[in-house]
Every structure is written in C-alpha cells, then in structure tokens.
Length: 128
Image (cartoon, rainbow, N blue to C red; front, side):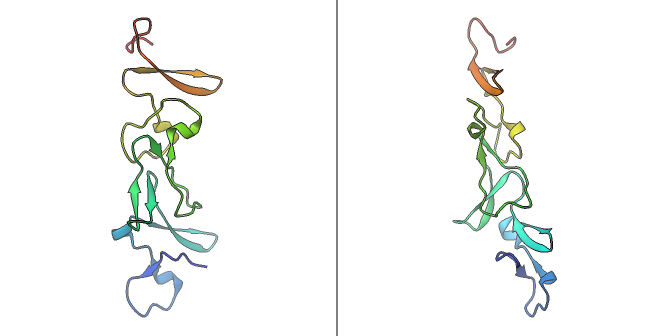
C-alpha cells in the first residue's frame, strides 16, 4: 500500500517506483519502510492539513524525525515532558534537548524533572 500523498512527476506512470512526494510545495520527504513508501514531514516540522504542507514547530515545541510516524503527527510541547517552564529558543526544534529554560531563569532537576526558576537576589542567573 502506497501513501496517498505520493504523486507522479509525469502522466502515464506505470510503477509505484515512479511516485514521489510533492516536496517542493509541501516539504514532505519520501521514506521507505519494509517496502512501503510514504511521505513524512522532516524533523522540526509538522503537517498542517489547512495548508497541505509541513510547517516549522512553533517556539516551545519540537518534533524529532520518525520515518514510522503518521504524517499527521504533531509537534510536542516542551511542557509535555512533565518539566516546568521549558521553551525552545526558536521555531523548528528537532528534539527534546532543544527545550531549555528561558532568559533570566535557571534550571534545577528534582526527581528527574527539569524545572525553571526565576533568578532573584539569592540566586543570580550568572551563578545559579
């Protein structure tokens, strides 16, 4: 079974191997797993049905590349990690490692959770 997003470059295609992803317009990339060819969004992007294209994850969210993921898999929020206050420094983050504490805060880990705290007179951001 081939992916519904696959298209042919020219009329008259006679083989599934002549199918490609409409990368130029959509940003989708072609992957093949166990003989199944499909279109997926690259890391740091998610598929938006409203535009029919891959769009960068918004600041504060990330999405690693997963060839097995459904095209509709969305970017994950840094807060979905169970951590508090983490953000990304911009759009298009590709992993949870891109989630960091924002400016004027410092990070501490408690019980395996990463937490961000505001700097104050007791703890400066230069020397947390």
